Length: 260
Image 1 (cartoon, rainbow, N blue to C red):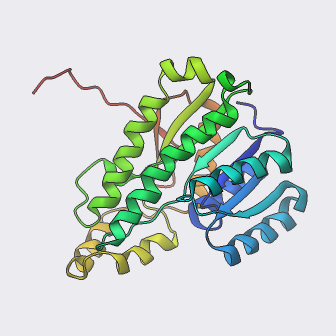
Image 2 (cartoon, helix red, strand yellow):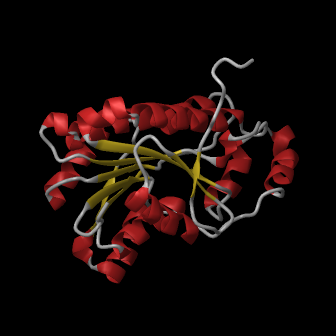
């Protein structure tokens, strides 16, 4: 994919991994709309990156992705501002495990991501008279082993991978011309690592810290660099891992059918 002149929408783009995605997209001559529920940080990020890459290349729109109408309005506004949308990155996510917060984790991390994927196909799909495009869905390294301290979060991210590899399959791509790819970040130096501790069972906070200590915590910039490589080269329906401050790796599961 040639990124120059493309238009991207990044949900949860005000800080952390999302902000790194926005930074690297702008660096590669992509016009970007940042969407986030945090208006203050969102505007600060827009101003910071606008000063760096030009105010005309980056905009901020407040959006709660659980509000489907607002999510669709944000896509429409992206098209109004920049003339098209070519890339949608469903990055918004939380890791809240306590009752009843875990329901919001499912709603943001998976239900809204599914809605976003279908909205992306609606506004980018060739079957809708558009030019095709790319949807990046953000999963997590927590899907590859039991992650007992944040079970709901890891389950939603497992669902993201399976949904993305299925909706990104040839059956759908041939119809829409929209690639769907999942990215699984490794442990990354962002606020969610510390904030999540306050949203897990208090009896598990020590276990959470011990679990995190077994991972290398990568620099957030590695996520932005990895995104660009994936956008340029990945096929629809593929899953990717970005961890340990090294370039992205494709994940392939080879399972003998019903070999139980």
